[in-house]
Image (cartoon, rainbow, N blue to C red; front, side, top):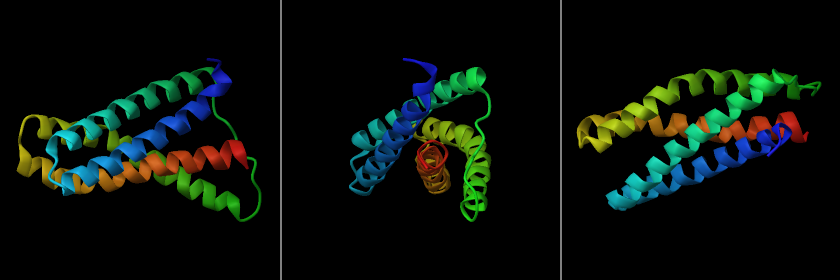
Length: 137
């Protein structure tokens, strides 16, 4: 795989993480703990693979400027800034939430997951939106 293909791979990984998060949420609502655990673990692994790919790309390419003009510019930067800030928060938050689930600290896991899941969803979805705005518009 060539470095210029990594942004599309990253968007795909974010899309997969989004789907896994949705399925994980569905399964816990159905009280299917094993499938929930599998989906959430796979979402975490997928997000970690994304992070490695993202870092490889940006270490080789650097920053990619947004070329959109007009009303779309402040929209893009609002999404980008919120995405970056929450992505920095979600990595340790997701790790701690998974850890508490694996250790069967269910009360702590549940309390933390109520924050982790929507933030993680936001980061995953906006990652795809940023890719589309940066590379497809």
